[in-house]
Length: 479
Image 1 (tube, one colour):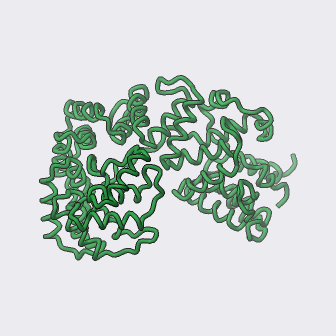
Image 2: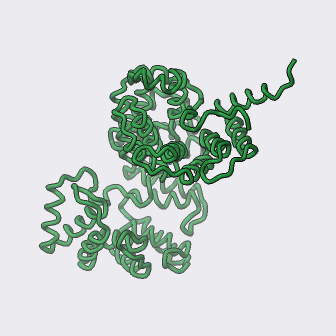
Image 3: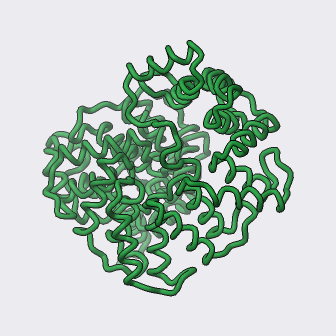
């Protein structure tokens, strides 16, 4: 193929809609030399636009395994507190042994994660009747972990001990296991119903949310039943569970499981918004920001909820606040320092989009010191979570041997293919380049290259469109 595009290293521009990012470019004071190296300010703006794709997607519901007030207090543990639990655990205190197991399982108080030690301390406490330890030990044995072999029969035994002791989480887990016949439990609808019934009597409001979720999805052996889901969400909300109020409010908004009633919906959503539950606040903020479930779209109303959620530790909310400060939206003044602060917080919270964006800033030194090794690490963490752009950017670094990565074109094209499957249009173009030049273990193949250029162009990728247009002009007969 003649007049092929520029080589991969010089062709890495992302051409997508640039709306709302000119101010970002100014706010983080881009270095003129770096800007010129990308082909001018327009190229930088279009590349940043690819990383800022509007409001982030809806945050996921709170994981069913996390129940308010039943985790042993995991957040913000100080090193001295962790050491105090360890000392008491070694003196035989069963509750401290449970807490020490939790410390080792999640790496709290500057203690390195260690599943083997977690199991050891959980077992000490579990064998003394600590039901929280019994349940946590059961989950670890059920799933296995580094250094810990799966043992489903023993896991079932410990989970059942916790359920018999009244642990609502364990009761729901058993109900789901017997309902679907998974994880070492035989399918037994009668036992499943029995454990659901016992769990419904729990004083733990989030157990009711878990039951509601199973009715809503038709999972765990329960039939899909929106009316029963609504009953349980309302019961959880009445006991002060913010997520229950939010879900019930949405059901009244949409008329699913209950008659449509905007007055009741507004009251329930207001109750949810008055809570301090970060996940609930984030989801409610998303509803207002996106205008979901028939609500009027109102970013200014959404922003305070999302900020409270971000300050409460929700990674999705932190990512969204970073967007707001970058763009000057949601009633926020543009503030590059706060944008980067929330971006870092979201990245630390394992938000893949934040990791990809922060990695890109480190790769090019925009608003942060240039650090390609840190960029590659962030890209890899995001790519491991399925973030398509991050897989493409990591592939580019591996193809060039940058950021401490060994140069490896075969691994690069593998990542490009992975990224293209995830929807990265730039990755489609990059695969075309590999075929165009015979890189990545592929024979030079102009026909395959054109297939990938056309895919990228059809998906809206500007460089591919421009290249195909130039080829079309070249192939046209002279006037």
